[in-house]
Length: 361
Image (cartoon, rainbow, N blue to C red):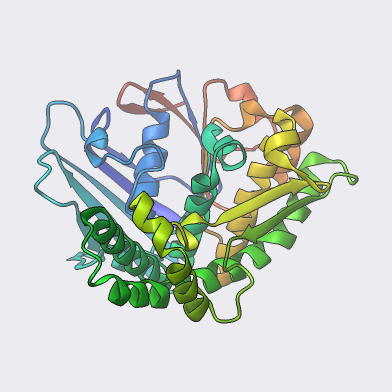
């Protein structure tokens, strides 16, 4: 997959800009706050319909304007794909998604046309933060892999919201009906997450060995949850909801189901979050992202876009060199404040970013 064009209008600090990166690595150099990350965010928005930095779409609209638009064009093995997103300051207006020149009726229609994997300093949250960060990682990967997963997760979360509303309102007459809907929706979510984790495990372990450079450190990941090993997730989910109903009524929320599942990360048998060093946790996060990159490439038959946001400066020279050797086959956008951070990256293009402007270096 190759990005052939990126257009921004009133997005973050950019009034209007067009980027046409060449194949290979495009290096974006600039001071902190110059707008480098905003370009990566725009690509991510077009691939997944959401920012990797904020849950509030209004944050991405340039101050003083009412709407923002981003358009991404990629060339794939099967031809050209063009996707776009328009955002509105007015909260009553929903964002609009465009696919190949037509307005998409559903957000899921965006998925899979352009795919990306982003590396950022915040990736450490994959290891250090709670289960939600790791579930989000799995959900975003699977949504890009399979539109069916995106819709299955939407259905599950919608049913979960309705069941929680009944618990809060104390109106339990329809609870059994929503239990059945929630159990039915949970089954594909659990199955697809479980399969993805098995595929990620071997790949992430291999990447950790290579980037970390220490054969004695064995990185492992495991899908953990009440139904993680279930052979009949729908029936076992229904049984679990029934058994936890009294507790759910007391807490006014659903305590059982895949919305509480976890991706457990260990290093040589010890919980990485509790016992890993900063360097080990960063290597683990990079290994997970590289494994996600591999899965997308295997499914698509071509590598996704790579977005690296000031990542290399966080690594020691050996890890930096090993990471660069792993990403050479993909088109990539890399940001940094100092071009020296990218020694060995062999960029095809170096661009200077200065407060809403992009200049050839």
